[in-house]
Amino acid sequence: MLYVLHGDFNKVLAKAEQTVESLLVKKKDALVLRVDSENLSVEMINEYSGAQSLFAQKYIVTMHRVLENKDTRDEIVDLVKQIAESENVFIWCEEKVLAKDLKKIEKYATKVLQVGEKKEY
Image (cartoon, rainbow, N blue to C red; front, side, top):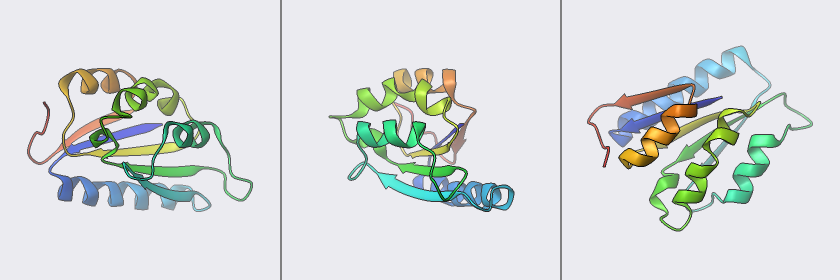
């Protein structure tokens, strides 16, 4: 399951936190993982999108500004189908999204929400 939030980043983060809180009400045993462009890798996405923890039924993975890293942006966008089909929940938070990337992401995401000012390029 993939939720994508983009726009005014402060508002995006607030909406992401609300989403995580509401998911935790339903899935109290979920493990919340927070990653950003500094510590996220393609290997990590592969692991989280396919992995199940021994101690939690599901992961809730929040990804912050992962499209800012130009070296991995295309690889991460190419994994959007895999992310969306995962048993784990991904909440993808961005400020700016290229129109071509957003089009591909929208094809697979459970929900795409523009929060505040539009930041599509």
